[in-house]
Length: 291
Image 1: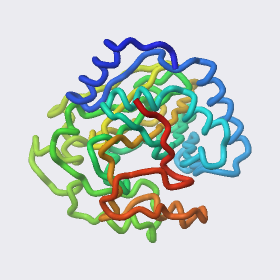
Image 2: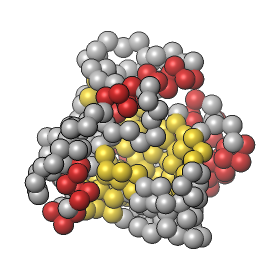
Image 3: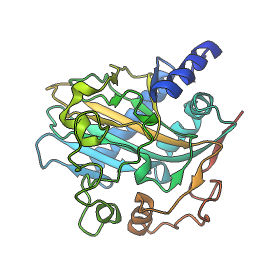
Image 4: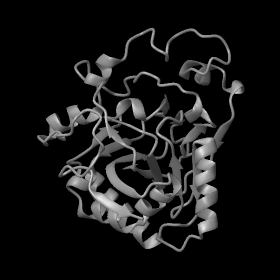
């Protein structure tokens, strides 16, 4: 991690609390980003892992928990300094690593990421949970940088999950039903995902063009999405890293992605009790930073 002043971190923490998202510039050494990018390219070229979607044109490559089998990704989690940044911005004394999510949209990939919140998909609850979005290429609105609905983390809304690419037997797909908050025909200004999609003029948005070395941080309840990559020559490789802070609790009161993932990859499901404070549960949730 490059040197960051306490003033910059304090400003980021204030923006995060007020708006639900913030950006820090040139806080990750470019050598670390380049090493990560090389690991991504090698993984994609092998084609052994991940969800490689070319159905709508272009190429949308995704993978999850790459840290479980990639030394390069694991090195980035422990050596990039992002855990310390996450802890400072969400004002936690400890940070446990939750999971990583690789999202690559090659040039001319129309696949968009629809408006959603993160927390409804996760087996967790609490205020001290944060995501860091790390670009490995310059990312702009044209190439598909993430866009956030300003202040939506404070709406006191918890939108049901919606299927992205889930199969009919996926727990998350089963938890979504027509008539949920996403589909309900509310009028203007009702603060639903449908209203964000159909009436963007009702809302303020946050979006930053970013470069390698930058990082975007966002709250698990902020509404966000990303367009497809409309550029004909610019890749958009990004790694989202999720972190647990002091008050994060294990919450399996709803379907979540980890259950299906552990079954798919023959991994042990975390043995934590409902409502238990999240602690290290190998191979998951290692403690990576303490104040």
